Length: 337
Image 1 (cartoon, rainbow, N blue to C red):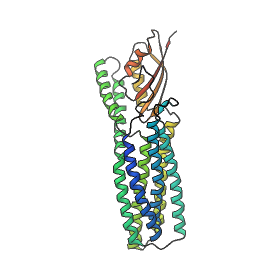
Image 2 (cartoon, rainbow, N blue to C red; image 1 turned 120 degrees about the vertical axis):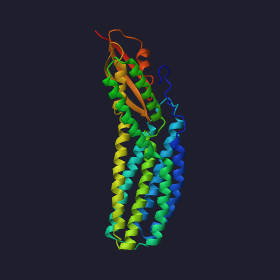
Image 3 (cartoon, one colour; image 1 turned 45 degrees about the vertical axis):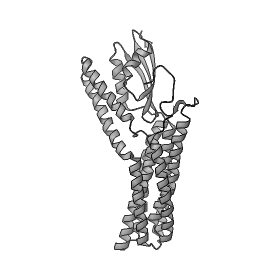
Image 4 (cartoon, helix red, strand yellow; image 1 turned 90 degrees about the vertical axis):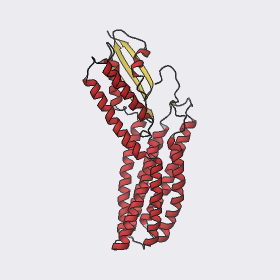
């Protein structure tokens, strides 16, 4: 935790794991995009064409993701950014979410158009290309590996909240147990900091690739149903279903990124930990507390305290030192009347 200096880089100048992964996925996506768009136009499959168009749009979105990583890293020490370039990450994620919503609308529009005005579909060729697209999308999802980190993030958040319930229930008299719990909590903090569950930029890239994988699966299902059961109308219907799911994902990403961009209060578990550790000190009352995210998984804290015996700010920062996600802490101390 930063306490004495005013370096506002917060490791944003380091290359993030998601940067290289995104570049690899861009290459795979662009190559498959060209193949699927051409095949969809030649073979007459709307589901396949929608899959290719999604790849085209998502290749652009992935390019935004890559640009955000590079920009944040290169401008991390730019003093014009008050708290570093950490919010470039959610800004790129928000942009990606907007693109996801736009592409969902385009997909739905084209699918409805094909439903009302059907065209001939060359099933064998279209199925073959759709399978290739699914393989590429599956590899891309594996490369980004965002889904696994999200599940770990939820698991650690739950355990973190449980810790504070346990700590609160023991009161102030068990100092040794408090210390043990804090060390345990510190391990959780470090583990969470190494994951990219808070990387909204990478989450955006992951959702774009997952959307591609979804449309590939729906395209294959629709094409098989059309070939073997005589249901060609299922092709555009699957396009509509895919559009609805992609739109839902985009809304979720818009909500999470907008909370960061609008300085929504940070996690309740961290706020509770801060309050508990400060009020464990003798004659300390927390009168005001603001916690907000300034980068992927890192937070700024401004807290006001009241006490009859004011101490230097460093005295109150010391109990918070093991909360590694707090990278910028400001303490205001007021004397009680």
